[in-house]
Length: 230
Image 1: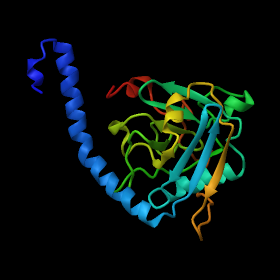
Image 2 (image 1 turned 135 degrees about the vertical axis):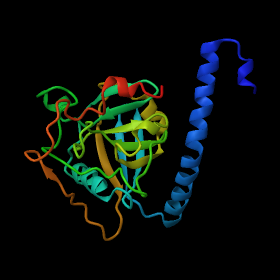
Image 3 (image 1 turned 60 degrees about the vertical axis):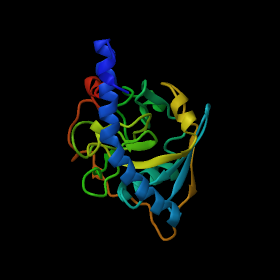
C-alpha cells in the first residue's frame, strides 16, 4: 500500500507510525519467539493461575531471566498475599495493573502500597525480556529497584518500557480475560500450578528503610509516559 496516497495528513501520519512500530518490533519478536521455542522444548518453567470474576489467567514465569522477581512473586502467592486485592489502574490499549494491598486494607492511596520491601530490577542485560502484548511485568516508579508486589498485564507491545521494567512472565491462557479486566476488578486468588524441580523461591529483598524514596509508591509511570507510543 502506498501510504503517500492517503490524502488525510493525520491518517497518513498514523499509518506511517504503525508501519514504523511494526518494523521496530519484528526483530525483537523474532528473537522472543526463538527463546520461547527453547522454553517450550524444556517445558519446566513455573506456572501460576490468576483467578478473577471474569475468568482465569494462566501465566508462565521467566525463572531463567528474572529469577529473583519470579521468586518474589511465587513467595507472595504462597503466602496468599494477592487474595482479595483489586486491580487499581487500567489504561485502554495499554495495560491493567494490580497487586497493591491498599485496595484490600483501605489504608493509603491505591497504587502506593507494597509488601514492606522492594526488590532489585532485572530488566537490563542481554537476557532481559521485553514487552509484548502478552507480557507480565513488575510495576515500579521511575526510580531503580522500587518494585515490590505490583504487576501489570500488557495489552500491546510497549517498547518504551523495555529495560525499564522487569518482564517476568507471559500469559499462556486467558489473554482475553486479561484484556477484559478493569479498575476495581478483584484478584480472587493466585495459585501455583507447577514449580521447577529443585528451585527454592526465597527472594533477595531491599529493606524499605534503604529503598530509594519515591512519591508515587508502586505506580507504573507518570501519565504522560503512559501515553507514549499510543
